Image (cartoon, each protein chain N blue to C red):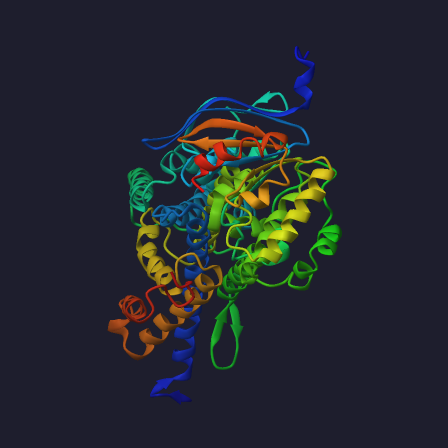
Length: 295
Length: 240
């Protein structure tokens, strides 16, 4: 058997794959956070709850109405995104322009409420969501076995990340977002409906998170607390990448997934701490993050 | 029905305008009228309330009371993005060039609010430097080029009333001269211009009228032909 640094190749590549999958989720989630932070200057602690809602809505739609995976892939992010727009319109807008800490506490409170209510209804033991039939099985690559669904998650996450990056960096709408990040008051003075842009941006960031939730439903345990578990790691990823950097969020997300996977292979006890270790090192050497602009 | 036929020539009428930033009361009852096609300056010392007057017109200050009519329409309840759509183009002090946007993206950022604006081709003919550097980052331009960009940006929108805040500040004389030529050309096109200006020698030959602002009020109104007669009054206000 091929060995690399005393680890069988199949084990290494398996962990690497899990790392890339986790990284794809980190990338989708931190991308949404970065988009929201860029324009709204809000540290969205409700992001994990939105991810959880994406997964839970997928499960519930299937159980109650038999809505299949493909429909849920579009419907769940739209529903959760619309919910996000309502949160922005009725809550966040009222504290716009205040210190970061207010929106942080508000979104944290919203997350706790959503999580608490749903825990009452669904418990914390995890709901089952059947893998869509066409994704059952996988392909043997020779050195490792690649389940079809994992490959699908990576492809979708990469496409969505690239699409988002493209929209923000290369299109007219994206130029509004970038400019709004710098001076939204002047943007509004030019005749751009900034309040609407802010609502839609928050909704879009939430949609990305909910989409990650839908993708997670068949492979992770769907529970009302699944969001709070992943959120802290995602925040670490955003800090490493640099707050507000779109490309940085994507690359760092994947990278940290891989780092975590490799650590799991070579020294498993450190795997849950390694991202935070990287965060501490990055903060010490480059406080604005790997891709953040110098303040 | 418009009770006053003169109103259609009145592009801007401000009455009893007070403006506040938080607890500080900046404008104390501004009254002024600008006719269509006029070039009017707001003169005064730093902190007199000239920039705040422009910002108040744009609804960019904390709180306002009084009345601001644009083309005969009351705008006190208008959201800022609807004010631009009345044909108002605002060029802020410090120019407001976006660093995350290229020159061309900066130029095409403000939506067109009225027909009859300057096309991108015309702008590039007018300012060849902007064309050459259209893919550069907006803030990599020189100060003069950034000012041209800030002006060109609002010309493209077709705005027919321009609010220009300290456009000559910190620029080389040759650039200031070029800006003067641009303003004359815009005036000849029939645009209404309100100019907040520190450089009186730049503003004097261009303007139809001057308002002197002090402590958030209009303290003097001087038309171009009274200028020499009232020079000493003006000097005492401006402290030169």
